Every structure is written in structure tokens, then in C-alpha cells.
Image 1 (cartoon, rainbow, N blue to C red):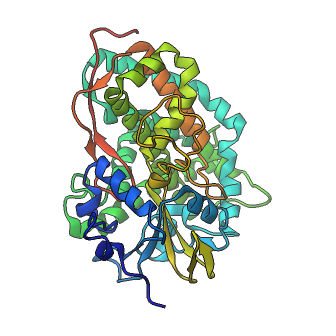
Image 2 (cartoon, rainbow, N blue to C red):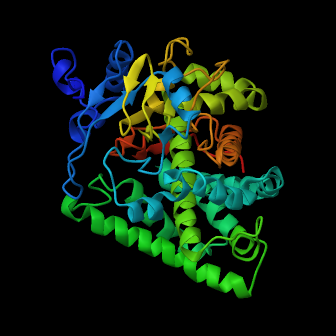
Length: 429
């Protein structure tokens, strides 16, 4: 069966939509993105797009764009049909070795996915998260101390990236001397399409492989040392402990570390940065939050994650024919689940483009849809974002952006590279 006419052709007289056009669509304004996805969501059929043409991958079939929350939830709940093993983070097919090295269990199906998640989840138990709480608070306090002392700064490098990067590295036992290397290499992995991080577009693969190899080596060296000299960090637990008689191989541990520092850093850092931007754009929402910091923080954090949707999509590939959105899809069809669009579905969100720190209910899927691939670190991310904003709003309540955010060039991550900020004199130390 031939795929339907691509939206880039069929809708050219409306908005000339093409979700595969990185420069032509994803670099345009957030408002245009809203309008485009609203148009796609209103279509009776699932919109279909040609696969992005990348010089380092062979041409492949196109994909269906899922923009409704109901469709994404349904696909997420059926992992045996809507599979991840052929790639979850790219519309284009990548070599299997590449997928596992950079995506770890994100790019796996059962039984391998459940085995790996079962082992690594020991680092995300309520007991482990409670043990991290004091460290999150201490790091957030230190960050705000430095901001008050140094004055106007780039929120990304001084605040948003520093907190999750420090927490993840401390959790794994990565020494402070290597934090900057981890920060730079994760920027390359998720910002490979952005010329600020990879200036030479023809060397994207080389840059990705080099960044991944550097991070893997950091973990291999640490794991070898922890095998003989264990401490109380997560690396020691994963190297030396067995779960139901299973342990991680060195390659699995290195791949999991890459996933953890990339996903654990990028998602939280972009939520915090977008939150600072939103508080600048919506002063009345800042006032509401400041009037009751403890009471409003839980709903405000969920609204920041919904509005920002740091991970724009995840991909699934059908293992067998299935119905979705009232449409029959064949085995082998690819679907991209656009969390960013679903989190503005008017069926579930009143005035969805508005930032509302008191929004309730808020059934967003900013950490992924229900099912086995729901974000393992969601609770940690929520805790980090909450602690950071409580610290900022309590001590520098007038903190604000002084210019528009410099956005990451990416169809996968709704990222901000730089956001200049300022605040009134002083601040509470």
C-alpha cells in the first residue's frame, strides 16, 4: 500500500508544513509551532511525512505524526505492537550498535528492556531519592549563592545545567574535575544538528562518536576502580551488586551512563530555563507563585514541564498491523509521538497555549506516555526543578530574563542554549 500524500505537499496552501525540515520548521517561532500542530491535530487522518534526508543514513520510509494525547497514550500502552527496538529518538533508521550505545534501554524492547530497567532502577527507589534530597538542596543553595555573588549571567550555564549535571555526576561518583567534560559532550550528543556545538555538518557522525566514546571511557575507568574500591555511589552498586543473579556488562553500564547524563541533564536543565523565561513573560503568574511558594510549586512545576515539553517526540515502529486514531497502520510503519503537541491538546487542556501555574488537572505527558518507557528519572527531575525554583523565588524573587532565549536547533529537544538573566541588587544569602 502506498503511503498517503505527505502533509508537506497536501498542506502547502495552508502552512507549508514539513516536520522533517529542520531549518524550515523547527527554527521558526514557538507560536508558529503551536499553529502548525493545531492544524495537524484537527485533521481527520494521521498526517504523514517523508523521512528526513540525512547524508549519513540511507533513504527510508516516512512516518506518521501523532499529535493527539489519546493516540500517544494508546500507543505507549502497547509496547509489544508499538516497539522501540528499531529506534526511539530518530525518524531515520540508525545502525543497531549506534542505537544501543547512545540510547541504552530507550531503544530496547522486552525482554532486554525489562532486564536492564530492573537492574538500573535500584538507583531510583524512594529510599535512594530521599538520600539525594539533602544533596539537591545543598547544590541548589550553592548555585544561588554564586549567582548572587556574580550578578547577571547566562541562566543555562550558571543555574539550569549546573544543578542536574552535578546531581547526576555525584550520584554516579564522577569527580568534579570531569563535570565540564560531561557537560560539553552531552551538548554535542543532543545538539549535533546545531552549528554552535558541531560547526561542520559533514562531521556530525564523527562528533557524535567522539563525544560518546569520551563519556563511555569516563564510566569504564570509574567502574574498573569501583569494582576494586567500592563506595556508596550508584556506579559501585551497579558494578558489584546482582539483581536476580544479573549484572550489567561494561558496555551496558557505559551506555546507561550516557543515557543518564544526557537525559538527566537535558530534560531538567531545559525545564528550569524555560521556567525562568516563562516567569519573565507572565509576571502575573510569578506573582501568584510568590504569594504561596510552597503551595503553588507542585502545580507550577507540572505546568513548566507541560509547557516546555523538553523532549519533543519519541518514535515507535509497528511490529504488526494495528488501528490507531481510527486509521489502519501496517506492520513496519513508523509513528512519531509528539509529546509537545499532545501537551497542548485542547481536549484535555483549557487555553493550552497559556502558562498557568495553578493549572489543574494537568494530565501532561512531558515525561513520556504510560507504559514501560515512562521516564525512570521523572521523580528526581521533579524534585530538582522544585528545589531550584523554591531557592530562586525565595532568595532572588525578581530574577528575570533580559533577552529572548537562544534556542537549540533540534527537532528532538526543545532546548535553550543561552538565556541572559538579571535581578535586583542584593538577594538573600
